[in-house]
Image (cartoon, helix red, strand yellow):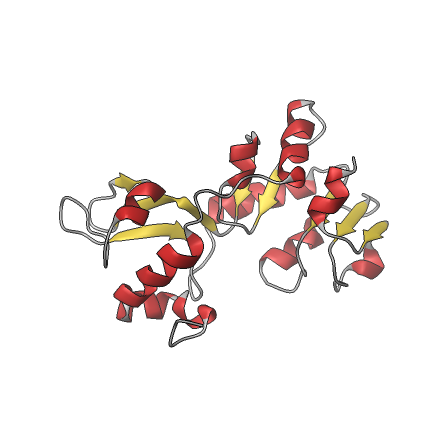
Length: 196
């Protein structure tokens, strides 16, 4: 651990405001993994969407890998490291700019550039949540994978699934919703989808 604070503290809005330099050091070191590639699950979701069998992907991940794999309708509950905006003028900056910047990244106008990610202590985007709720409420099957289903409000979205609609859970460990699911696979999401 090369940081004086735990990740949960560093990724809070308070820390971002008070210790911006340290926040951005962590952000660049740990969150800007621009060489990451989609895995079998990302690719299969994109393939299912293109075939008209998948309506939407709802993700807590901030890496943009669903879109990189080809998914079009993605609700990014916690935002994306691929989008960064000046807090003063709103100008957009890509992830490569952030990675190359030093210290606290500044806009050409002088404003601080903030990643479009939801930090601890910040609320989720209401339009994104509404879209995710609508997608779940209209689903004829819900596949939930790679999440413990304990982080709220995202974990509570399962509650919008209509009664009688099949629920499939794929996660290495047990979740609080295992007893409600029609099918539970305690395996990694990538492993399961690489076999389909």
